[in-house]
Amino acid sequence: MSSQSAQQTVTSNASLDTEIDAELNGAQQLVKALENQGVEYIFGYPGGAIMPVYDALYDSSLKHILCRHEQGCALAADAYARVSGDVGVCMATSGPGATNLVTGIANAYMDSIPMLAITGQVPTSVMGTDAFQEVDIFSMTLAIVKHSYIVRHTDDIPAIVAEAIELAKSGRPGPVLIDLPKDIASGNVQGKRFIPAVEPSNIPTTSSDEKAALELIRNAKKPLLYIGGGAVMAGVEKELRELAERTGIPAVSTLKGLGVLTKDSEHYLGMLGMHGNQAANKAVQTSDLLISIGVRFDDRATGKLDEFAPNARILHVEVDAAEIAKLRAVDVALHGDLNEQLKVFSDLEPQAIAAWQFDCQAMKKEFAWRYDYPGKDIYAPWVLNRLTEKFSDDLTVTCDVGQHQMWVAQHCDFVNPTQHVTSGGLGTMGYGLPAGIGAQFAKPDSPVVVVSGDGSIMMNIQELATLKRYDLPVKILLFDNSALGLVRQWQDLFFEGRQSEVDLSDNPDFVKVAQAFGVTAKRITHAEEIEEGLDFLMNTKEACLLHVIIDKQSNVWPLVPQGKSNSTMLDNGYE
Image (tube, rainbow, N blue to C red; front, side, top):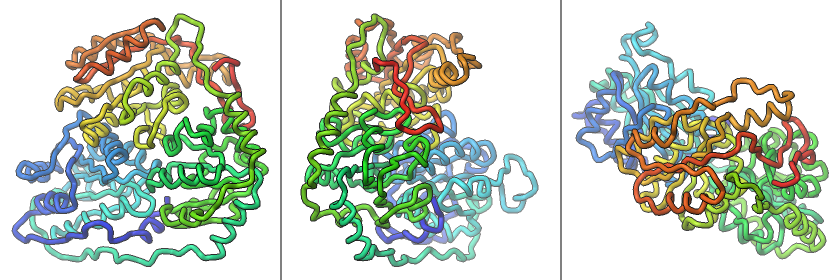
């Protein structure tokens, strides 16, 4: 993500209220500025350098959510932004508080999530002296934010906050950092040197690009819609569903594009990539035109890049100019807001691609997921398939990272993309539980289920206390194979079965752990208990945890080995 391109796309959609009250200190100016920008929730953890802000919060309308670790704060803010569509705000003190936010900031950056991170800093008089809890968080996060600020004058704060929020959500969204020294927060240091950015002109799409794009599609015999997370951030799922229905062009999606098209769409072939559906990967490899919408040609989607879609020309529709032709040469690019660029296709008629449609439908049928598992053990894909069948369509699933993440992507049926909340680009273990907290605050009247594994849950298990503190009815579906399952699978397949440091057989009793936090819990161990277990999740009104024991040797299939072509898919013949 280019910070330069991000700066170029600042618009005036947000309120740029920069009113200054000279009677207020810096912390009070910050809180007032956040209120003026419509912020409702802050996920944070107090400490020394940020204490003046916490004092100002005492009298404010802002709702502060105390997570039990700063990483939990950042990940909860990330998920809140994904589900609500608003900027997620997290806050921590200087030093370790700020560094504990870094993983969450990086997570938001990789997945283009609008976030405002506020950090306390030591007083300006001792900055650069290795003072207690001093860390140069401004420099440390330069590579993972769209923009950063160190506040030098109290009367700059309203304009900084207004611009930071606007930058976070404009163009290609992403995180922005404000570092606030303690003396600026405590006092009233005037200077008024900060000048908000002016609105630049948008880069138009030329008529020749539009004409060339339409010509590519009309001449293609095997066109394919390739839908990524950028389409979700732009909110163009309605337009893309209509485009697929009107033109009959088959479609695939990335992990972050799930839910744009639904599984019951006759044109949708599923997720592509390392753990994608074979029909999706085979269609990509056969296609002669990829209509790539909001994608970045990530290696987990493309496999070996120089063998990805070898017969296809590329039409790339993308808001961030830095992504166009970064990894794959394009034949035609439409650069700009996806809501505007997709209007180029508004007059496209049904395409004469009957043979291609027939081939895609045949592959979709041939490689449909199977759930007729013959064993008595619990089959995780079936559990997840039933999960989204049993819950209402407003269910939100927040997912951790590991085998269960891929099973969720493969087997849960999402009717809209905000139902699926997961760490895509960074692959952050420990994401699921704090993300469930953020999602529940974003949609307090809708069910939220965290899907986690026994490895991931331990990364941020302290956030069970946050569930209890705020009486959040978040449900946790915990798969336990007593191993770091995905690493174990790779070691078995590619490292001669030399299982190194993946054994988790000394896990705690997760039912007792949940109960110790005041969270209702239940365990199931056999296939015949699946329906009863899912009913427990559905019918328990408060936070609860379903501990699901699965076979240690369970694998995710199919699988494209890293560095191999997507045409090289390993499968065990069943899954």
